[in-house]
Image (cartoon, rainbow, N blue to C red; front, side):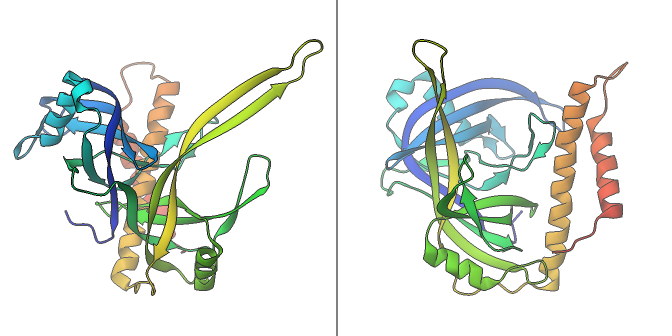
Amino acid sequence: MASTFKNTVTIVGTLEDIDLEIRQYNDKVSGEPYNAIVGNYTLKAGDQNVSLRAFYRDKTAKGPNRNYDTALRWMEDFDNAKGTTYRMTSNISSNPFVGRDGQVVDATQIQGNFLNDGAMATQKAEFIVDLFITASPIPELDQEGETTGRYILNGEIFDFRDTCFPAKFIIDSEQAYNYFESLDASGSNPILLEVWGKVINNFIRREVTTESAFGEAHVDIQQTSRRENIITGAAVEPKEITDELVNLIKSGREAYQVQRAAVEARNSNAAKPSGFGTVDTKTATGAASKNISAGAKFDF
């Protein structure tokens, strides 16, 4: 199925690390069992490491899965595979999850997809997407509430099924900020724009000091990694939003709400087990879909 909207991520880098295992699943349609390699692997692109999620089935409808065979070789002889350059093409996809407060969090991910020999390619970590915008950029704040000098552009993008889901992008130059501000995007003036940029993994180091009544203070050093999609360019002119695209965006938003409802239902079922048997998540998702369809109002 060809998507109406652009959404492509290209990572070219050397294999640095893997955390993979083989698991068995049942096909959702046929019920037949199959093996899949799941976990994470890391490609080093230039001076940064990009961690990618892996889910490679052993077979496709056309036969053996070449990506599965590649990942299996990594697991069998990682020392030999490490340092090999690969070109990975994928996309930014939705990854909603339930936070500690029990609320669904809108998040995105880059899942490892097609792997090819990248020996002759220049190392890079880039994206290009069609971005649907209904608001201007806002200042980015650090943990202390101070501005960082960068801006956050909240919008929506589309996967290969044309599901429309929230995505956050970073603007780190005044020139880019002025351009997006000049678009005057709003609910009554939506903008569909092709943008591109770099996938950056940042390591955030934070020191938390607890003063002591006597002796030395306790210093806890916390380090986390955060992936950012930084916009470095955009098309000169926005795309025309036709009636057909409006309908696609509406149906795409509805599809994402069904996805969120399924995540919430799974969490609710896990927290509150049934008194007998199990809860049919398909039924729960279907009910959510009907409720959304009946009550949805699409005001850009």
